[in-house]
Length: 193
Image 1 (tube, one colour):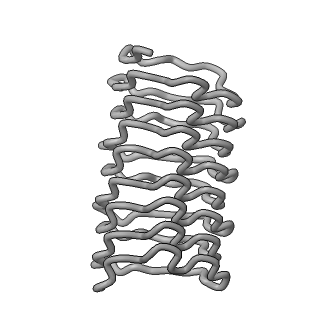
Image 2 (cartoon, rainbow, N blue to C red; image 1 turned 90 degrees about the horizontal axis):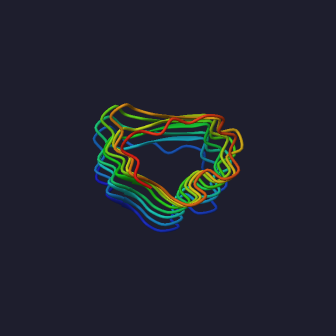
């Protein structure tokens, strides 16, 4: 496939658009701001070649329940609000992703599970990243160093947070878990603040 870029707002408000497919040999390099905003996509598998998903790319896709990434994904960035107000129920993030930016899954009220590859490179979770989700439990990848301000705010079903023995977590910022249902937590020895 020769498609390398999907421009900003390319399919915004295309209410009849319910399916998008990329070949296993796709060379896609970018999905622009608002590219699929408010479409009727129900699921999408993003190509391994894609290094970045920009802000608001899938915002408001009320029927979007599944996003997956092809094997050997090189994804390095997910922009702010990229999946805001979708109906995602679960997602497995590729190992290549170094951070979850501010507001990435904000308002994903159906999101109950997030998982990470064993060799995850994730080092930070941004402000309001999981604001008002339905996450119940989360196993924090060993590589994570920072959970920022209000990261899990209002995730009222979040009861369990598990850190691996060799966790590299250094900091949990202000109000990171305000409004959650956390019952018990065992902090890793690496935690400084």
